[in-house]
Image (cartoon, rainbow, N blue to C red):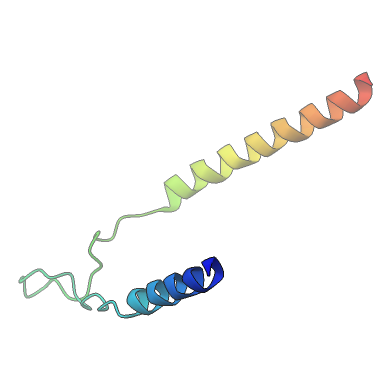
Length: 74
């Protein structure tokens, strides 16, 4: 019974999620020169992406360092 209930819930959620209306192709602004710019404008993501990559590399390096340090101690 629980398995049937979970299947029904999953099917109901998948059908309701696929019935969403797609967003409008323009930014919704009434300006004639607005064109089809995205809602957030032309915000650059390169700076934030570089910071996230550097932090991820530092975190991974720290994890590798700790594993190697633990191997030499034992």
